[in-house]
Amino acid sequence: MKACIGVETWTTMQERALAIARRVDAGQDVPEADYYLNFSSAEHLASELTPARLKLLDVLKPLGPLSIKGLAKQLGCIPALVQTDTAKFLDLGLVEQDTAGRVFVPWEAIEIDAGLTRAAAA
Image (cartoon, rainbow, N blue to C red):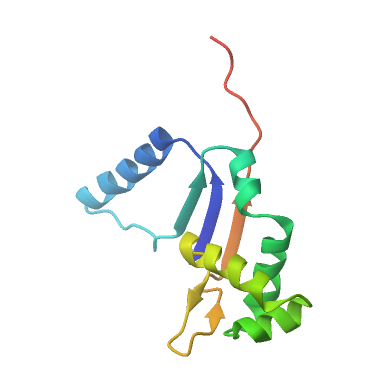
């Protein structure tokens, strides 16, 4: 499974969900569900997924479960900053925590689509 991060309107998300529901109702196979995390704008996405936070994901993903202290050491920064960014990712569903309190990225891949297109003026 992968995490798909992007900019999508509520209407578009509803349409995508309804299309999947129609396939289920018709008895068609549905692929394993990916995780979708959408923001209202590219600016909002960039404010939540800062370069430092993206670096944290990039470092953590291949290493597997790490303590906050261990992750801070890998990143070369103080644990308090890593704790703050990790808490944000836990809230967003991009990072999970095991029973020992270690954090990890549960996704095979993370795709970010921050399209900068504007709707045409009417």
